Image (cartoon, rainbow, N blue to C red; front, top):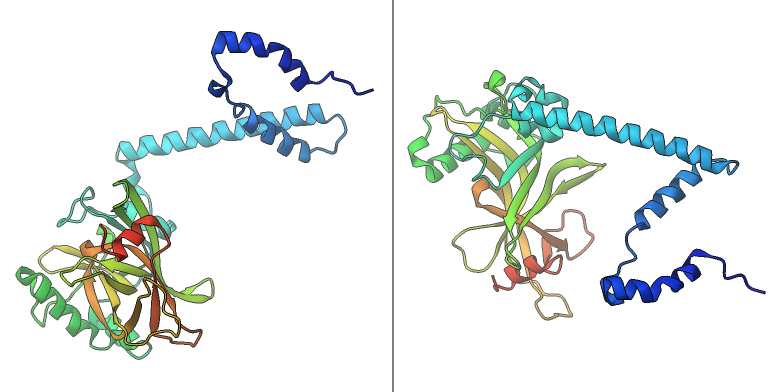
Length: 321
């Protein structure tokens, strides 16, 4: 016959005493110990099945040793950063986290900034004029780049308006202040309008992201009615002759489209991407957003707004914030 000599059956004999000592079963949980079962199964999978217990003990000892070494290294690194010793690290060794070793931006403290650049693009010493010379032949977004950037700065920051002979530098590191620095990634922190918690988006503007061009879209905070969306084309940090440091995004804006699909659903919004690029200060960039081309044609400029990626986006797009 069936044997009842197993752990769960034995546990039934303790039910009455457990309820009397610890309360009703809705106060109990079977979650403790589940993680250990997974670890044991993973360790067993690494054995040859013979005298598995001994092999599993050795595997566990090695994993504990590795975890202890990892924890020691992490604690030492954190202590070094708190002591200010991390300033000697070479940020070029990790372009993805290059901004972690940048000097503080004068016009916005780290606590006030809601963005952080990453994935350093270039390492050559160039100015905005040289960037235009190098890129204008390849990308129309950089035609008259220097002139348009100067006009944008004069309009946005009148006190920092530039003369023609002034060069615009963009830099990341204090030891190389005479170089333009461009980035291919930005980390955006924003407050959710759903529960007011802090959220983060990681956005890319990379012409060759795993073999494909990727230029993510963002929501811009401006005075226009409704919601303003743009596509990021480039991320640049500029050092002005006045000593001020500004972060600028080269973008393609979107405008409402007259085109409509044959089947129009509730909340359908169609927008057209502008062919001409413009600039925006990073302090006006709120969060990432998602748009979907209406067709698979290369270079399609007409897009649907996707407002169902999360609850925060749904509220922002529909004006419920």
